[in-house]
Image (tube, rainbow, N blue to C red):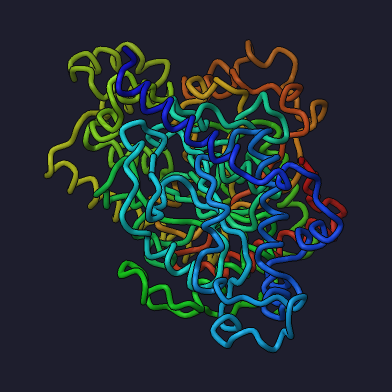
Amino acid sequence: MPSLHHQACALKQRERQAQIDALPTAYSAPLSDEEEKIHALPLSRLVSECKSGSVAPNNVLSAYGKKTLRAHHLTNCITDFMFEESLEIPAFVDYISAGESDAGSLNVSIRDCPLLGVPVSLKDTVDVAGHDTTLGLSRNVNHPVPTSAPLVRMLQDAGAILHVKTAVPAALIAIETESDVFGRTTNPYNTAHAVGASTGGGAALLACGGSKIEIATDIGGSARIPAHFCGIWGLKGSVGRFPSWGTRSSMMGLESVQILAAPMAGSLADLEEFWKRVVSMKPWTYDFTCVPLPWQNVDLQVEGRKLKWGVIWEDGICEPSPACKRSLSLVVNALKSQGHEVVDFSPPNVAEFLKLGYQLVFSDGGVQMRDGGLPGETLNAPLKGTIGLLGLPRFVKNIMAYFSRATDPFYASLVQVMYPKTVLEDRALVARRDEFRGAWHERWTEENLDFVLTVPHPLPALENGTGERASLISTGYTFLFNLLDYTAGVLPVTFVDKATDALPAGFMTSPKYNRMNSIAKGAYSVYDAEKMHGLPLGVQISGRRMEEEKVLEGMKVIEAALKLAGTPFVPKVLV
């Protein structure tokens, strides 16, 4: 007899297939000319057209539903189809399109909906009443939640079309999106490669044009790494700026590095409009965790002043691959050509700060994630390896550290500190975290920086199944800004080029490679510019706490500089 785990996986897969089979055949047809026009509308124009009555929400759903179904067939990115019920909200019940009646008959409440007709997908960590919130784990199958997250209720009040939930890896902490419940999600640019994690399904869907906005979550790069891998835009705010209550985690109750909701989009204009319109809804009246901070208008381009950008070229753990370093260099050179000041930034010891952060995240010894699934559940290899390390007796880890200290001091020091922490040890780590935050603040202020630039990850999208060699520790470039609670965004810049971005001949036997720590060697072992040719490459931009508006403006400055340099990013039509 199949185990409870296998029964739950089979049940969920049958349920998802039944949802697909029940869709009208029209969703399998090509987009009509009218639907192509609707799909091409930016978010602001789409809302205006819906409010005027010239575009009906059901026609929007038809266009995006077709793209969604194609995206799912290509990448396996959807966990829950909610097409029909997405229109069963008050904003749409009495909706009258201009084609059926006079547009003036649209009621006032509809005209006040700031996201009317905007397709928004939800990561399968966001509670929607009547649906499972799986976290990619079989234990959560067939346990529909009774109430929706405040964020969901707010989006419904705003008139958004919440049409799907998107795939996540089992227990979330990963750099590939795969679970026993839903299988593997693949990159639409090259299905032999990964989408990142944990918002991999949402990133794939956005890259294929199946949604305007994805509600991601982020604790160490879960929105920004998939954005980098899939050529889209994402912005992680500071804790309290964007409504996050009712989004679930495999580490519920963790406060030292808080998980938060973070929107992603298929364009920078859509991302900014969405942020602005969400804040206009006064999210603090829905979600008690939100800070009552209205939108602050910032326009760095009109001001015309030249900005100061600090660049962190490497985090002291894993040097960026040639492709990712080139992407960052393109941005640096483009900004310099426009007269901006760009300087190398050397903040307080990044590697030590990250090592402290990994201890905070795994202070429970990985027990919550280890016990989150049913017996037989497959966790991703990097997470499984980390939990295994945490479970080793400390004397064994001391022996491991002793024998590796001479050749790999970082790994040796990491092994020794990765053990379950007592309450007092955890509090001491939080106190040290705040000391690092204070040192960062002082250094940033001394340098008088506007922004800091880094790569989002040392690698482009990994080849499927290579996450274990790349390791969770390679995510330090994004995790850093969660530890700081700084605002950070990712935007696409260019694509991998197999000739330009290849490693030098003999690199894997060179002195430089031999000097690398085991984390970096593992990452470089999966780097292959030829296999990665054509995959997107992004850059990460950070401001300080609560500077969401300023970071969005900084992203605009980067895009404008790249355009003037003759190297704008042009997304590809994938489905």
